[in-house]
Image (cartoon, rainbow, N blue to C red; front, side):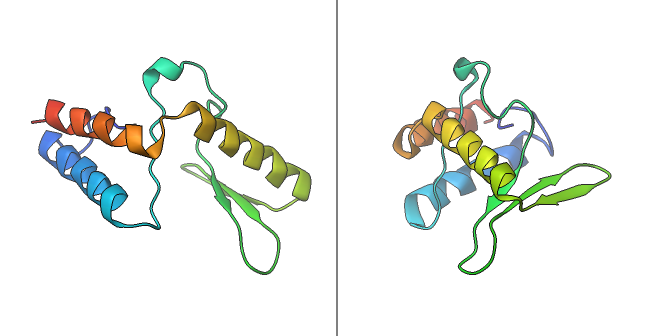
Length: 109
């Protein structure tokens, strides 16, 4: 949530500017923003982490206030992989995400 104020405007602006810096300078970092205009999307169920490892099974991690769920059944992981792919296709490209991040940082000035 890039627009929900947590920690104050200056803190948020600094964090967003840091994300912009990472997106521009670190080839290992890819940032894609899913704008409000995307409407309902595949990630409406909530956040998750999809992790792949060189050896062993891939893993989905879902964290909440009171629990953490780790799923590694292939059919479940594939469902989350499809969800991730849909989110990436609905989001702005990495190149198009930077101007939106810049605009949000400017709004926080």
